[in-house]
View 1 (cartoon, rainbow, N blue to C red):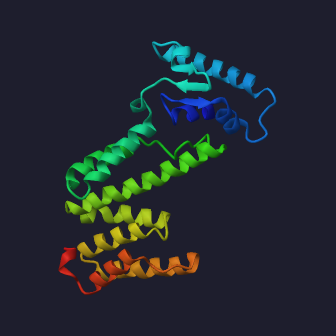
View 2 (view 1 turned 180 degrees about the vertical axis):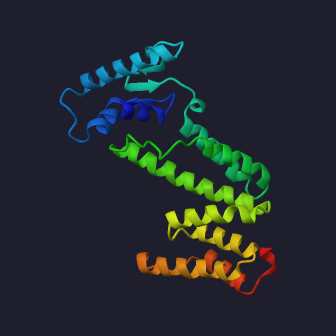
View 3 (view 1 turned 90 degrees about the vertical axis):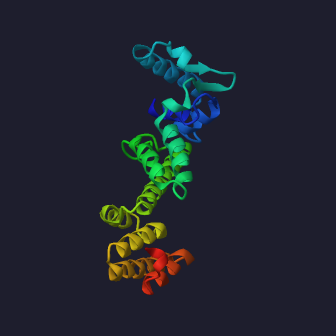
Length: 228
């Protein structure tokens, strides 16, 4: 039932077809009686909703002409709250970093662990989980960028080191870490991050660092005043 609920929660207020639900639950070899099995699971799900809401299970999980629909507002779903806050916060990083910091922190508060942790067997849920986890990391990067913009250089170094260790070869994290280190008086450490990232990209992916990372390296090397 977790997968069933997750599929509908990914599209609140919109119908999810019988075929999509059956494929996610049972894969390409769906049960011969998948429609009946799906109806039984929906009935169980509706019964679970009754004790915790004022509405009936039928009002929350509606039957449509083509499938089922979770009749709740997107704001009641943590993933949708996260994505909306992420969108708002990210748009403010360059123009209003202090405001962006608060919004992006609120976005990350929506998380309790990896996305869709118990329901990643189906293709759609797995793809949604990958997208959400990637978006979370991007928001963490945006939050740190906003914090650096308001002068929180020392406070970000430890977090950046940890994120860079967990996500080797992620160039934006390397850029942010290099900038934080440089602004805390650790020029040689900042340059070492570039060399480490360059080596990892070459050995693991056969790639060279991107233009932004190379330009930052050169700016740190000559102590460009624009970095202060």
